[in-house]
Amino acid sequence: MSRDFVGALLQLNAEKQVPREQLIRTVEEAIQSAYRRVAGDEDIHVAIDAETGKIRVYRARHVVSEIEDELTELTITDAKAIDPDAKLGDLVETEQLDGDVFGRIGAQTAKQVVLQRLREAERDVVFDQFASREGELITGTVNRVEPRAIILDVGKGVEAILATTEQSALEHYRIGQNVKAYALEVRRSTKGPQIFVSRTHKGFLKRLFELEVPEIHNGTVEIKAIAREAGSRSKVAVASRQDGLDPVGATVGQRGARVQAVVAELSGEKIDVIPWNDDPGLFVANALSPAQVLSVDIDEEHRIASVTVPERMLSLAIGREGQNARLAARLTGWRIDIRSDVSVAEAKAAAEMEQADAVLAATNGATPPAEGEAEAPAKPKRASRAKTAVVAEAPSDDADGAAAAAETVSEAPAKPKRASRAKKAAVDPAADAADSAAAAETVAEAPAKPKRASRAKKAAADPAADAASTTEEILAEATPAAEEVSS
Image 1 (cartoon, rainbow, N blue to C red):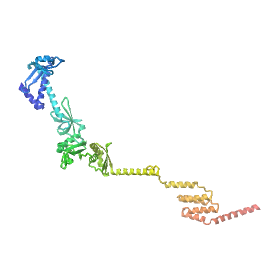
Image 2 (spheres, helix red, strand yellow):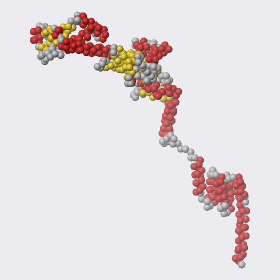
Image 3 (cartoon, one colour):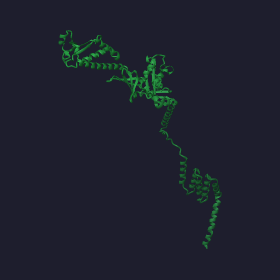
Image 4 (cartoon, rainbow, N blue to C red):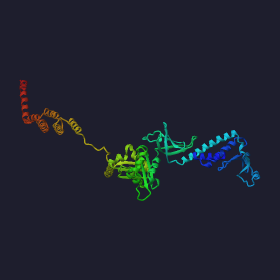
């Protein structure tokens, strides 16, 4: 019986990977709990010899100064009566029991307890093994695919849970496929340890580089920072701890062999490897790779980096939907403001112009007009209307008024038709020679049509003769009337 017991312990040790001492302690506790199910047997203890497998059952109590539980404790006086060398805190054996006191029911109970305790011990061992692997890579086989997660078998009857939120959008899985994942957390459960893994965590990318790049694994090249958008693009900042070693070249490998192996594991995700720099300006410029950077202004107080890039590089620096700038900001920890050199030059010119206007206004003592409010020259149409209004208001009763009106008309760029009407109005009301002469001169100065101008010239050729002939005609008509009156 003892040999069989020892053989069973060795077999459990090999299968369950549970230490031999822990197995023996587990069996002892199981048999004790089976004995203590009977009232009054709370002081029973069990000891198993690991070499021979012999089981010894006995009663023992703890030595205390004041007794609180009479079934499991005794005073120092009673303990010295049994063992003269006993002292406070010792476990003093009071009675030796025969193992045959176990009946069939007791043996069955002990078996049940032993099996239960062995399972608990196995779970504890497995939990301890995987709990120490948090933050490490775990390789498992796809066991089943569920709507919200993929279950991986990582061995020893333990399953890892790869949630949908921790999966890359570019990847597709099939039953039996080997999958590497990053262990996020290990939890205890009634069915054993639960392992939650991820393939989108930036730590997963770091562990892959440690597998592919020996310099990163041994610490010669250090990964300083990682910014990642799983399934799309990642940026990795590396630094060298050894003089003369290029960290970027060591990480990328000959002809990109090392980084391509990582890209293949990530289903084609793009990876930018950039050198780390303690200078924030240089680090921000490197982080915006592959775009070329002209200058970087650092605002330490607000943690803002103002970056100037060539106009042709602006879209490349920002990236599709701002991805390049967003990853660079996460990698460096700075808020990045990207502008082109053309916009910077325009803003500078505008600032200089405003400054010059302010200086000029201060010199003249007047406020400079706001932009867009400069005095504009009057339109030609409105000017002609103003002059026409002046013509309408000018007096026409005396010769001076008529002459002034004629001069105004000659200055106004009026239409030819309206000008001819003005000429007629100036010729007809002439009552005397002076008025006629002034009207003729005015008409001669007006820019009239050739035909009408000739008529005006004929009318103004001999104003005195016209006036004399008109007088004679009036006298000839008046003479007969005067004779009739006298007769």
